[in-house]
Image 1: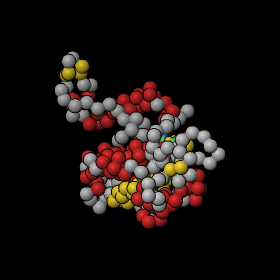
Image 2: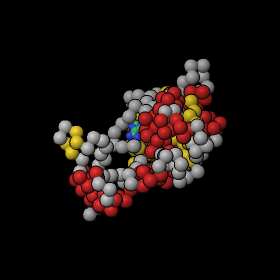
Image 3: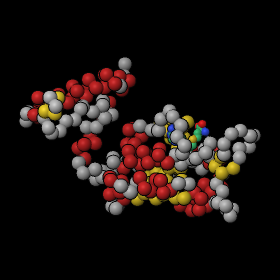
Length: 222
Ligand code: SAH
């Protein structure tokens, strides 16, 4: 899958996406991640990519020309999604949809955001990772790239693990335990220590339901 990311801090995205699962996926044909430096398409000697907002007000706005030029040069896969606190809320369902697509692209804003003509004429949509304001879209882009990549078949060693994770089947995941079975007197639930797989499955289903009821009742609907 090809994913293109546009940013004025490409090294931030590149560094995060070079370790662990993402780094490994990038060494295979499964993930073709291309990070583009918007500044390369600035036209003046100072490589300016921002300017003061028309109408006044605080902060700077990203100019349209370098963004349009960078996207034209890269011919990135669509949809091209702008990271924005006002965008559609990213969730596991959106991650799945993107993982099943041929590819997509992410545009990271900085400062007060991007000139609205970029939103209206270049991007295909806007996406948010939550109701809070970051300093730039890079962390949001990394979160989305990671959540999507781990759903690409073949990326995770054990395809089973994606199927039992939080949000699958509308539930959070059951708690995990590993050795030691008794740590400072805090014991692992007895059922997990035996080899009764049906009983373990039942315990996990109930524990998942319990965790969801307690922490995320909204997932269970009304
Ligand atoms: N002035 C804007 C916030 C700009 S924050 C407003 O009030 O809506 C600068 C950039 O960070 C944004 O352009 C966006 O790309 C990114 N960003 C900030 N918060 C984000 C969030 N919750 N999700 C996705 N991107 C976000």
